[in-house]
Amino acid sequence: MSAWHIKRATQQLQAGGVIAYPTEAVYGLGCDPFDALAVYRLLAIKQRPVSKGLILIGSDFSQLEFLFAPLSTEQRQLLNDTWPAAVTFTIPCHDDVPHWLRGDFNSLAVRVSAHPQVRALCDSFGGAIVSTSANRSGQAALRNAAAVRRQLGSQLDYVLPGACDVTAQPSEIRDLLSGQVLRAG
Image 1 (cartoon, rainbow, N blue to C red):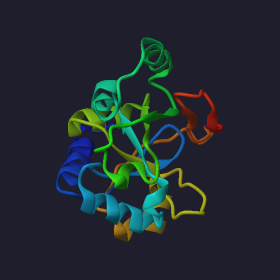
Image 2 (cartoon, rainbow, N blue to C red; image 1 turned 90 degrees about the horizontal axis):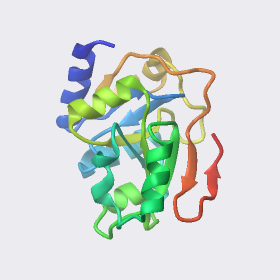
Image 3 (cartoon, helix red, strand yellow; image 1 turned 180 degrees about the vertical axis):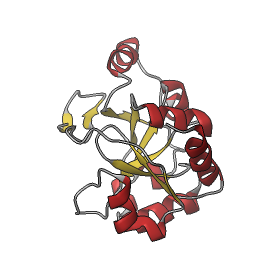
Image 4 (cartoon, rainbow, N blue to C red; image 1 turned 120 degrees about the vertical axis):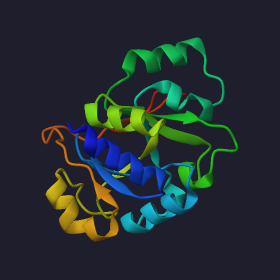
């Protein structure tokens, strides 16, 4: 992992850019979650409706915690016991969390990643970033930088080189309140 590449990706995020980066299983598309123009541009690239919401990914729960209603001791323990890992939780969020992040829901999907480049990128950026699979909606997720460049490259500001575990499945998604698995990993 090159510090130069992380710095370049961070600069693009800070400038309102949309990037692609490796995650545990697939390449992700990312941007600053609080830059509405960047998020809507990412949604247009992916051809994903805002109503579906997005996942935020961080290197530590502290990068995400301010978005949520108070959590019980048991809920915090479950998150601490699970993360970092390729497990996404939907968690009830504050009313002022932007619609472009939560979609038509009163919860937000979040994950604390174990992937070293994701962690370095979020630490360099100083917070969580958007994480949605790098592909157009309805198409197969892309698992390497070359495939991302072929399909989406002209629309992206930067593609962070790196490796995904091509044997891994996309992250499991669980509802924190009910414990229901919304998408198996």
